[in-house]
Length: 165
Image 1 (spheres, helix red, strand yellow):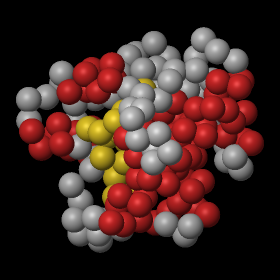
Image 2 (cartoon, helix red, strand yellow):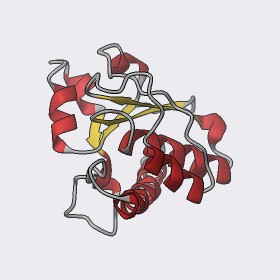
Image 3 (cartoon, helix red, strand yellow):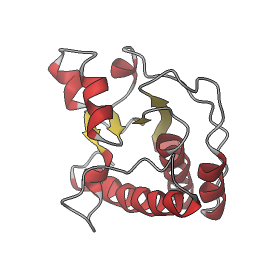
């Protein structure tokens, strides 16, 4: 993990990189901008599958981002093994994403970077999965946005408590 005061590199990961992870990336960037922390971070997102490479985020994710004061312009990409070396934190949305990422390495230092993002949601300490809203409606995306915002707050608190920020 990053223990100096250089930029902290964060990668959000979901399945197709069109719903949860680009929304997390956008909301995280908005949070960083609001709190004058943007220069301290490099942020990206990726998917475990190749289903949507180069697609924009789902229109419902873009709508929730817009409701939260940010625009999603990210184009979907697939997680690549070299991402382990590029990022300090690889924040996955569910156990299936965790398993897909973990299966790409046997290096413990790489595995230590992979964390379930919702584990930082202090309102629901027993919930570890960010639900996939893809087959739902806008209200499902709104709920995911709320979960992501809470998890962002918890992640920033974690970084501060551990003196990474």
